[in-house]
Length: 285
Image 1 (cartoon, rainbow, N blue to C red):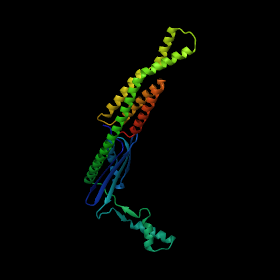
Image 2 (tube, one colour):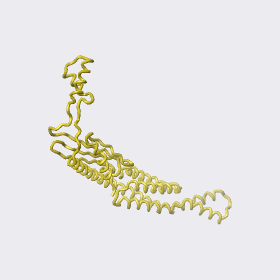
Image 3 (cartoon, rainbow, N blue to C red):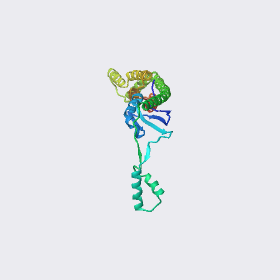
């Protein structure tokens, strides 16, 4: 079953003094591209978290957010008093002002607040991992649901191309007869005697150039292979993309050999259906 690369997952856990929330959003991409946002205190675990995400989501442009909200009385930031006083003295030397106003300005300057970095203990990291696993499950469920919609659309498009191909097969004898008749009329209009045997040989050679038997068989096989691959256990968007390219190649060859307006109209319809498949294919995992 195919999966979409589009998805969203979010999970939150409440600890005694903080709330941890993990959000995952994915869009289509040719490769895996993870953009991570998290508090600096948790950066030491970023590589491990990235590996977990990569092993689960495989491909796509991934926005990963780890948010920590303090809900208790604990705080990791304190006023850096020495730096703050230096800032205030420098501000006083530049302009007069009340101390409270100078303090407000100084607090906005670098290093006015200092953060006591605390290592993440293993129990908290285990909770973060479990939260990430739950968010990954949500986004994968989302991707699967989107994949069902894509699969339904692909089946309809491929079935439409198959039906158009049946019309091409049914029309082909009339096409060859029309081409033969056209050539015979062109020779007759010349009002010149021609060797009948030689003309027949040249006619057969000419008609062979417009024969589409192999293209019809290959196109039918490619369409079947597309459906077969789509229903395999793993989602393989790249492989489906390659198959759709082969489908397009056969359709184009039929169009170039057709030399028959009604068949070329069917080819245009097949190209239109295939183009819609290719557009949606960009979003398949």
